[in-house]
Length: 89
Image (cartoon, rainbow, N blue to C red; front, side, top):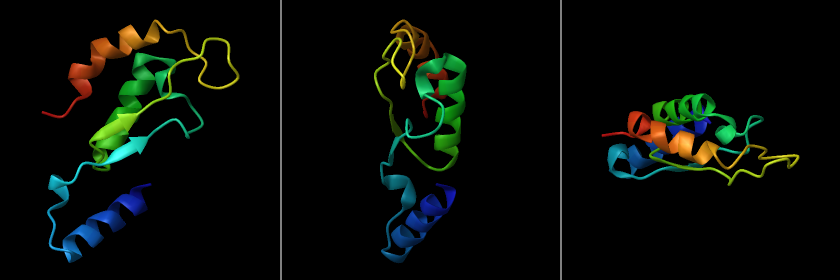
């Protein structure tokens, strides 16, 4: 992903666009670990995405007991509590 993010910066630069003016969306739940398994995991995922220049994240709704996206819905409240700390100013 880092290589793709760098290449996108290069393309924007070649086109005369400031990379900081482009919103970047990342769907994070194709990774091996579900981003909403805990607030700590979400914070780590969000931080790594921000380091690569992503401005917005998409996560899957938790599905308690499912083979994938398994987490209690209560994790949404826990993640919402840490959002101010991981959001860019």
